Amino acid sequence: MHGEPGSGKSTLARALAPRIGAVVLDKDVIKAALLRSGIVEREAARGAYEVFFAQARALTAAGQAIILDNPVYWESVERHWLNISDAAGSPRILIECVCPDREVLLHRLSSREIVESQPRDPLDLIHHPGSTPTAFQPRLTLDTTRLLDDLVAEAQTFIEAALQLPATPTTNPQPLTTTTRP
Image 1: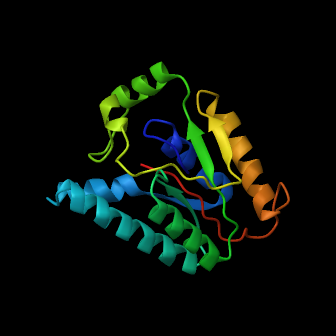
Image 2: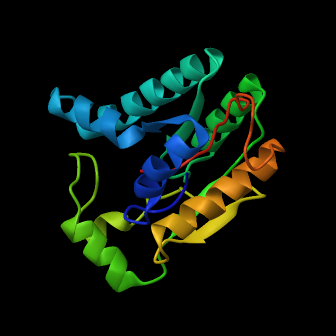
Image 3: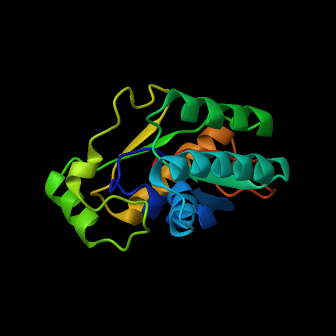
């Protein structure tokens, strides 16, 4: 999963995961735990990514399908999820969430239940210098102002096509790795 904060990545990931038999790894949950333990922001961010990708590698090595929930604005993040996909023998699948209605995005940020690492202030959406969104293709870009059920169905169809699975698989699907940003 990929997209800016408030774009709907986590909501879509949590709704999609049971439909495809995946576990959601959310970098914000890891970073928030590090912040609560007293680790400063800069170190918590670095540590959260280390834990995030180590856990992703461990789960995929055990044959578990995963959805990585964090934005992909750094080349190193993209490189890590691509390597994890390759090691798992999974196709590289990227679903990007966008919320083109800034009023809706601002409402989401100000009203959502958040963990300590998630921004609530729209000024926090300014990206770090040197960061650039992933250029990875192919990707499915979803306007998350649409109905969640429709988004889940479209994402599931995209994933099934990438995995070349029948619409109703009779066997266990291959490991799946997707990406999102915090």
